Length: 326
Length: 300
Image 1 (tube, rainbow over the protein chains, first blue to last red):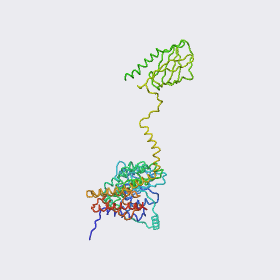
Image 2: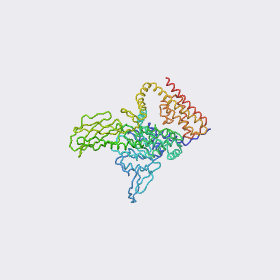
Image 3: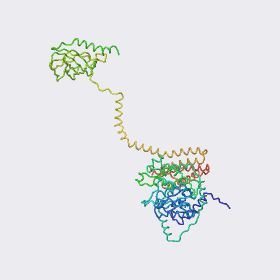
Image 4: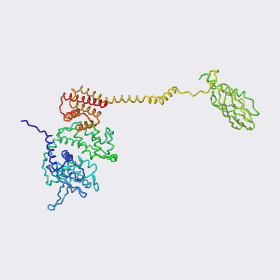
C-alpha cells in the first residue's frame, strides 16, 4: 500500500480550511472578511474592519476567537473610555499597603476593538502603542503582551458625528483594512433561514496555539522569487513616484502614497495567501489579491480623486492594472 | 590709396576751390562772396550736398527765397535757406548733382541780389570720362533672393495645391502602408524573439527561458487583443482572453503555458527540453492563428 506524504503546506491549508469551515457554520458568506482576518492573524498583523452595522463584523471576530485556542476580549470603544480602561492601572491593596498592577483587557491574545473611532485619540494611541510595541507600561514597569497578540478593530464608515477618525500614522499600523460588504441575495436568504432556527451554533476549537506556531513556520518557508519581490516593490512605489504610472493618471489621485511598511505587509500577506491556496510559492496572483486590503488605508487621496468620486479601491485598481505582472 | 584717387579726393577739391575763389564773379552791388563751403567736402553723383556761400555785405539787404527754384539738367536744387550774419549773410543751397566735373550752379534770385557763379566739383569714382548718365537703378538684391522668393511662393501656393490635388491618393497610400507596417510589427517582433530564444534554448536555464518566453507572449497578446494582458495574472487571463473573443482551444493552450511557466518561474520546477520546444511552438501557433483570424476579420 502506497503511503502519501502530506507536505507542510498541504497540512497548513487543511488547518486553515478547517477554520473556514467551522466559521462557515455560523457566518454566512463574508468569505473575504474571514480570509482577511485569517491572513492578518497568520501574518502577524492587526486588522481593521470597516463596514456598515449589521454585517457580522463583531460576530465573525468573536467566532474566530472561539475556534482558536486563545484568550479573547472585546472592548467597546466609547467617548468616555480612558487609556487605563484598556491597558490597566496601579491599584492600592489595603491588606499589603502597596500598589499592585491591575492588567487591562489588552492582555489577551485577540482584542476586538469595537468601533475604534468612537474613543478619543489618547485611548486610540494607547492601543496603537500596544499594537506596535507589543508591550504596555503600567506604573514604572513594562509588561509584554500575550503571544499571539492581534487587534481586530472595527469602524463604521457612516455616522461620523462625534467620532475620532484614526490618523494616517495610526492607520498605517494596521496590516489590513477589510472593507465588509453586504451579503449576496442567496447569502441573505440563508441568513434568514438561520434566524428561524434558534438553536445556538457551538463552534469547535480547530486551531490551537501550537498550530498557529506551526502555520507561521510554514508561511516563513514559502518561496518568494526575486521577480515577485520586484512586483511587490513596484506596486507600492507606484503609489508614490513611479513615472511609469504617471501617464496612467493614477498618481494624480494620490496625495500621499504607501510607506515601506506596506511593502513588508504586502510581502507577508502574499505568503499567507499562497499557503491558503495550498502553494509553497508565491505567484503574482497572491500579491494582487491582497494588495487592495494592504493599500486601501494607506493612500491619502487627492482633491482630484474626491472631485471625480474615486475611492481608494478605484485608484488601487488603476495602479494594479498599470504595473506589469512578472 | 592710389595717387589718382588721392588727387581726386583731397587735392583736387582744394585746388578747385582755390581756383573758384580766384575766379569768383565780381561783387554784386557792394556784396562779395568770401567763402564757399561744400558739405560733404567731396561728393559724387547722386549725393545730397549742402553748399554754404558766405556773402559779405555792407548794406542790410532784405533777401527772399524764390518760390520756384531753378532747374537744370545736371543738378536738382532741393532747398535754399539764408542765415543772417554780422557782416552779411550765408546762403545754404541743398542740391543733388547728376554730372561729374566742375559745373556752375544756376543763378539763384534772392530778391535784393542774385547769387551767381557758384561752382561745384562733382567727383567721380570711375576712371572713364565718357560714361553717360544712367537713370536711377532699382535696389540691388542679395544673392539668392529670387530663388528664395520662388521657393516660398511654391511652398505657399504650389505645394498645398499639389497636396490637395493628390491628397486622396496620398492619404490612402500612406494609411495602407502604415497599417501594413503596424499590423505586422508584433508578428515580426515575436518571430524574431522566438528565433533568438530557440537559438539560445540549450544554453538558457529553464527559469530564464520561461521568463523570456512568457514576457514575449504577454507583449504579443497585449498588442493583439483588447485586454490588459501585461498586467494580468495567470488566473485573470482566461476571463480576459474569453472577453477578447479568442478561440477556446487557443485560450486553453495559452493558459496552460502560463500556468506551467509560473511553476518554473516561481516554484523553480525543473523543465525538460521537450517542454520548452512545445511551448515555443505553441506560441508560434497562437501567433499564426491570431494572424489568420485578423486576416479573416479584415476580409469580412
